[in-house]
Length: 114
Length: 445
Image (tube, rainbow over the protein chains, first blue to last red):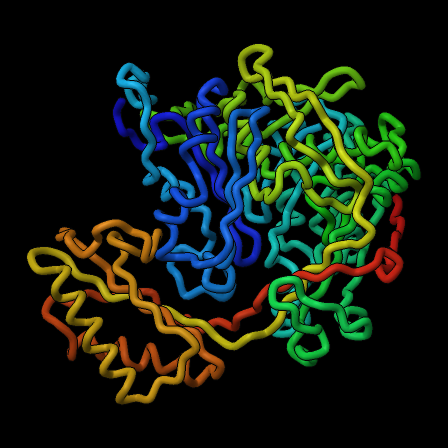
């Protein structure tokens, strides 16, 4: 087994609603869904995002498209019109999700090498 | 049906491409974000002579209006903002200038609910507080309308439908429900229209826009991205784009857009239904053609969502620039000096934020190991949020003297002008449908 970035198996997009951000995690191959379902837990996500939110983190399963959807509350310092942050939209937080690492078999074809 | 824009300041040229090469019956312009109405309202308070509708209205519609009339392509747009009937009159004026002799424009206005939400003393979902507590500070309040009035407008023969705030996906449901004569009590059909609308509403985002990540997700032709076209029949739904544009429509682009700005994918709340995306199937038919199926939904919620803008003080930012050997240490020294100066000038702020641009300004405190980095150049960015405008102005009074009082090699962020801006904080609340008056008007040549 080897440890790789979530980026090697899935892609992410973030969107914002007032003070919440949603970040999708979508497998390049729907058949890999079981890997993210098991390993990309709320705890794993909280570990990466806890410095910028103590709010609720919800995880929704969307196996029909091989995806998970995370909703992180209280992450935008009150929302895009209120925040003192340089990046006000929260949309760039999709790539923070790639700091979540996962374990895959040694012969797993990483996206960057395909 | 084509999606000409994904937001208010999107590219202009895709509309012409869709009209000329798209073989479409409808062209839709989604031109709002959450903050659009409150920003327009504040702008109108400051500049009463300016129009309350989208200032890009002329620039978007003039190049295509004549061809749309000739080809019988109906235009559906939410560029009415605060003044849909004013916008309709403007379109009539453009039509006259273009020599169009017959046109019908229908405006749909959900009006401002500032008084209603206070009268009914509705509760804000974000903090549980009552609207009446914010008396005098509320600058905007508007409901997300549904698609029924668009259907009615099309039944009445509208060539152009222009609305105020409306649920983005309902802008697309309207033409579909009209064409197929869908019954609004059939939740699965309405969810079909809403799901299609959701895939279309952000324009290029389903055609390879906001998607490219070199080495992982490569997209060609990004400077000439196609905007989406949906081909809809009772049997089949295809998302595609014109051949002479760049970008890509793939299963992956459709999946990213399906989950964009979504909370619970089994309950996408809209004015017209609750759509459930957990049965959706996404399948490539051929190059740049993706079939979407598995639409289902439940009965619409009893209430409408209202977005509320509230004045909440001021925010401002400044930047100080460093490069070369020791850049990071000099930026940190500048931060220390400024923190001392804020004590000396007794800055009263709700929040003070210092970031190092290029180091930790985007993922903020979640940036890994940022302290160990030694960049060639770095920008110290300072932002403060205050109740009082005079307090916000203090930031500039402290940052500009750093040009001669700060560390060596301090560079200056050139643009002058006012960088203090008022904050309009956003809240949402739910209102019963009966309390939302909808005014529809017709304008004809």
